[in-house]
Length: 326
Image (cartoon, rainbow, N blue to C red; front, side, top):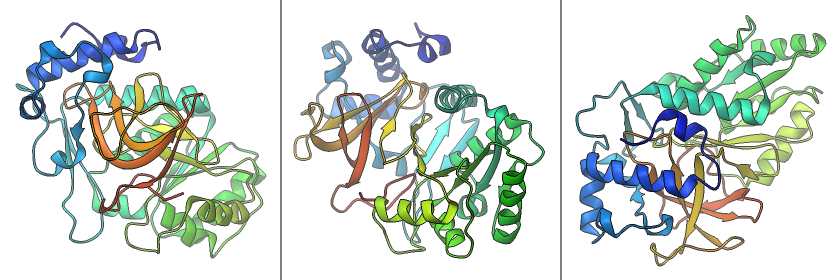
């Protein structure tokens, strides 16, 4: 391939289209499932001259096919979460180095050095299920924080509450990362006034609670933790990059990840900013799988490149991370 990891993680806005076209040609030539999909919809590599012509692979294909470059073996297989009876997506990741680079560099871009934080993780369903990309990322963040206080919490909420009180007294910077339903469960039992705390919800009720709009969830959590805003992560099993929101549900992606909206009734029609449409994600870190994913999320992209998730397409399965309706 005529690009490198360095090219991906140093890409600029001006160079994004050129690099995306290189990644497309590599994946068309080397990822059989993507090649077959492009051929099936009548798209040949030589016909694609600009970003808007690149086909996006429906995310449902990860449920039924191995999306992986020829000659590559999966170093790890991430599996999506979901409610009982749903078919899980599987992401065969040939190289974890780009994933680790992606989430490490993205965190540093938005929050600074991970070593400045104690990382506390409340991800019970993900830990219990295993094979979660979110747990993999969080384990690395905990390790890289180099803080003895960092760690996972399963159902030991009282212990988590005591730890938060202790860290507040110590004036320690703390990131509390949690699946939404677990944070809500915690907030109904405990409250604390910890304005400096970063509470980050990763989305998902996983069938354990009634679906709630984002504003309702965030209002309950801000009251319980004594914080001004609730942060959020937008990612999914099939991607190797994440976007972050520092409040109000407005997400921003790293330079190698781009949100493109398509018309709800014409998948080939790309929408302008400030319109509402279905989400296509370009994730250039997803080198040996597919960097061009058609999701069932509904969003609005703003002129400043922030975006907000406002729901799901009709009949779309409930899935994480962070697919609460707004």
